[in-house]
View 1 (tube, rainbow, N blue to C red):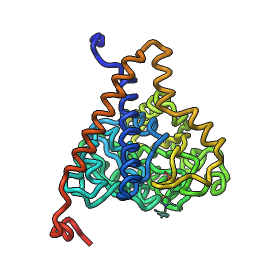
View 2: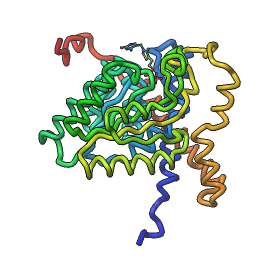
View 3: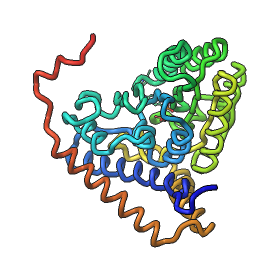
Length: 322
Ligand SMILES: Cc1ncc(C[n+]2csc(CCOP(=O)(O)OP(=O)(O)O)c2C)c(N)n1
């Protein structure tokens, strides 16, 4: 039986989503004020990151893409070190050399962030093959996050075909956020559900409301259990929306305001908070305290990052392999 004091995981998932939103909002503000390096935010997609990453075990690995802050934070990355990385400081996870687009955190099993669209789909097969051949802890799987645009790349099909044929333990997580930079998804693909392409490679799949963290989490747990039991890949499609621009700054002038408003009305953080309130699982006071905690943590992260030193010029040629 659960001890009465054990925290409700739905509350901790909500706090994790709030942390991602607050972290990225702070980076947007820093970008607007200082013109510091831009970033691709995942505002609106937090439920997917938290719902999936919370379904993984510590010995599982992640290979992700250019919109990776949520995946990293959900995995437990420190927001101060993340921000220091984006601002190019020595205390960043990659000593300030990767920015947001190449960040990796080995100690958390986040093997890499690929900024080449679809690059994660090729590399995940290698990481999963290594896993299968006994590198890393036994039983681990590899989750990869990519967008609907990446699913249009040829490598998508090569990756799924190889993973299915070689039985690689990969959780493919397609964050179908309806946009591919400045191009609408329905201009580039004739299918309603990208999942149907997984079926063509005999990969088991599910499409789920990517703005509903509980639904994502349930689907992700099922996917992870299936991969562990069968050793085969699994495809999870998250129907979601990119509520901010492709990168910062981007005024989204190309987006129909009615479309944006409709998705804003389905903000995953608001949905999760309302559901918990309606179920009596939390109170407005508790949510206020949660918000204050998150804001304080991000304030501390920004102070840490801004206080971190610039790298020494001699660092320019270290850690460089090619
Ligand atoms: C091979 C390649 N082509 C183009 C780009 C430029 N680019 C960066 S992100 C992006 C859109 C990717 O869309 P999607 O995969 O749906 O991911 P999202 O940005 O929507 O999360 C493009 C075209 C790139 N980085 N790599």
